[in-house]
Length: 292
Image (cartoon, rainbow, N blue to C red; front, top):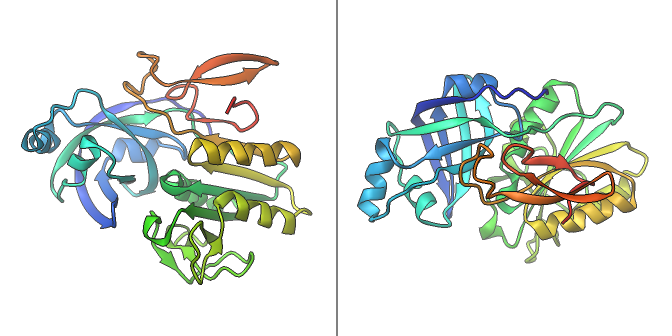
């Protein structure tokens, strides 16, 4: 996986969509983006034209800035994005129908990269932070990398993934996996803060630590995305155990191109604190350089 910043602005047709509680997945026909996007990169969806403008008008809302979304998967000429309804923009997107069209800009941002010298990739997603990880798992598997995944949520109803009993990661007394990883042959495990008979009781970080303790003999590279507090706790574990990692951070973005400076995040480089832009310098960063 290498860094290439060819960017396309296209009208993309909604090919398929489905919903699970307040979580939605939309498949968009976007050949140029599908052929060039890399795991960890994102697209900006504009809601000021196409069928999305009609939705905004019907909701009494005028959308000015685009919304950024990680690419969750790629299949042929289609890309998949996953999101939860948190505001007017995502509420409008949740009403998109098959055949509707939206304007896309992408691929954008810095992708994940595989670091040679490791024998297993551990993917950790907290809530909707799981979104960029299925695509990453798919690409890593194709590269011949051994991949496992952990997805955490507060409760079963808050899980943004579809559960399955196929391809369950052997850790603790867990009997549930995420279908988004199972379809790529990647073992995964579900962690829930509220007790559930078939899931690990605790946070994604708790389950990650449990897995790391049981696999201390392995050279692990950790790839994670989720709430800031989760990444902060995970970063502490990686530092203590001298484990390599990359984090995709969740920041509010306006332009997605580094023009507005609205997504500045603090990092440490050469022992000094400075600021980077999540949209162009990230969203993927070395886990150890983020000042969380």
